[in-house]
Every structure is written in C-alpha cells, then in structure tokens.
Image 1 (cartoon, one colour):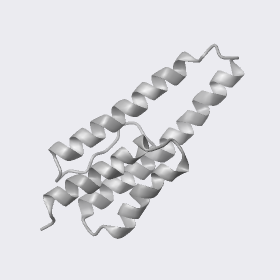
Image 2 (tube, one colour):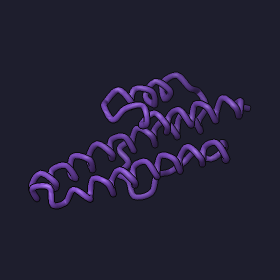
Image 3 (cartoon, one colour):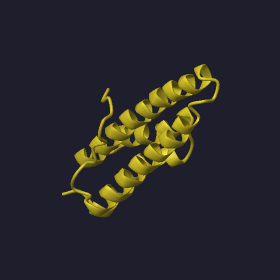
Length: 113
C-alpha cells in the first residue's frame, strides 16, 4: 500500500508545476517525479501533467500565431486560453487532493505519453 499523503503531495506537485513558470523548466518537476516515484497513481498523474504541458505550449504557440497574423484582433483568445489553462490546472490539483486514488485525466488534450 502506498502512502496517501505522499501520493497527494507528489500528484499535486506534478499538476501544479505549470504554475511555477511557463517555460520549459516547469515540466522538469513532473519528469523527475515520473522517474523517481514507484506509485502507479503518481506516475500516471506525472504523465498526464507532462502531456498537459506539451498541449499548453502547442496551443499557446497556435494562439500566438493567430494573434500575430490578425495584427492583434484576436488578442481576446490569449485571455481565454489563459483562463482555460489555469482553470484546468486548478481542477486537476483539486481532484488529486480530494481523490488521491484516482489519476486525473485532462479533457480534450493530445496524449503523447
């Protein structure tokens, strides 16, 4: 049996790492947790967090390109993307803290890992 408190902390850190920075540094924490943890739920949460990071960067690049091409007319897309990105992350952290035995799955993302 795995320690539920340790599971909560590591899973929340995996998903919450995106709050640390929007750069590539923030994905290092879930990658480290993936390789260092033996808990299958924590590992699944780390994989899902890595996939979410990749999707945030991909869709962020798409939104940035659309704003650039439209000469700023689509700037409200950036605000919408910001709300979706932070909202999903808060939902994930809340989920892993309230139900630590179930890995969180982000809706509508491309899963690479």
